[in-house]
Length: 143
Length: 433
View 1 (cartoon, rainbow over the protein chains, first blue to last red):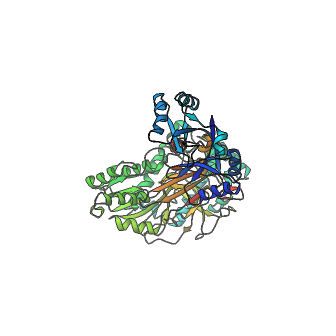
View 2 (tube, chains in turn yellow, brown; view 1 turned 90 degrees about the horizontal axis):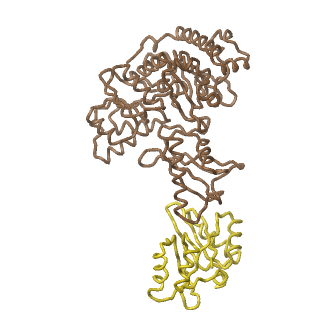
View 3 (cartoon, chains in turn green, yellow; view 1 turned 180 degrees about the vertical axis):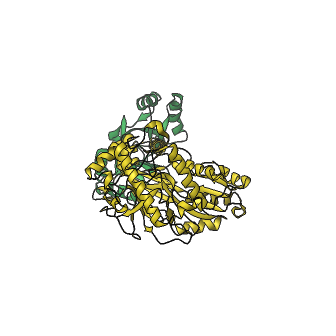
């Protein structure tokens, strides 16, 4: 049920983000979703791409500090209250969300959101028990 | 003003006789009592009896900071530990500090030489001396303290930091002499301005500043902001502490207290002694120290010696302001820092191949800021911001506890710290003195 996410360490200096997209673009990797977490000094760029292994290799070869992290891709109804339906059971189960961000594209008619939590398996079980669909990696990469 | 007119104005001929007698005595003592020196002199083919003139000094081998490290902690002491009444220490190039010791008589000599230095800076028994050098293993605080008491002045042993308190005491006690690092003076001036304190209205007449390099520009700026006359003092713990050399009222070079320390300038590459007036590495031989005598100690400080008679009447040669170092030691807020110390801290935290850069700056607030840039390695990278921030804090905390200096740690991308011939450049010093 897990999806591979690419995380890249970036110093806060101009041009670094452009270099990442250059490397991926030249290598034929397509970005499906992205988010940046930043502090005053550095940022962490997180990407869901069509070919995580390839993206990892390309970025590493280009000298970036990269790692692959497991996340959950959660399919939500694209209507008011859709996100709350997923967050509520997680909160009740005492599962902390480290971060989340949304896909630009939709999967079918639903919204797609990436979740990173500390207890991945537990979160997956809770969500599924509440009838929320987790989108498997292969499907996400093909979007 | 003189503290010891006889010693300070001794005719050269008489002074050199005294120096030779003291040098012979020092060489004989270390040969007899310090196994390291006996071996060093033997290897150099020297015997105490070979010293027949001051020129024979050149035949003696050098002592280096590495020698001090290898004999850590007490290996170079020339008296049994029971005769040592105090130790001080300064930064070593690795984790271990350089330890120095003093007999009761060494402490007396030091107090006397510091009294001499403070008197040159205008101190009398009627003065209130606010001593903002750090007290502790560092020689600055206690060195000044004993000299001030020797004169009979009123000492305020406030130690370093706590700027608001410094300013309050200065106003309330009517301090007349301030002793600290020159950069701290400028920092205090900024703080005073922010607090609306009129520095020009203070009673301060002299400032005796040292423990870090500074310039004529800084002197002008300090004197423009404070009512005091600023003097440069020089010393290093290995040789004694503050009070090895001091400016007189003429303020054109620092008189080296030659009746106790024999200065030389050498070419740092060849080790050849250079003539007066040429710039090179400053080397000292102690002439009266009992617990920790040193032969030709290489200070790594760059200076020059000038023998021209001084209008003040003192006969001791003058050394130029320190203009730099022959090694990569940094002085940050008066604390000696070697890049290798930072490296051993990083290694200690488990980074096998630490690439780092030290960036030193003196910002608008006038206090030295140390930034340590550390290249993030694959193994250190976690996907969470919190994890990386904790890593920065852990490194900063470790640096503080080992070096005693607060630094801002900044994680940078791998292979971004410039390397030349595979070796990283370790220091960027942006301070303008």
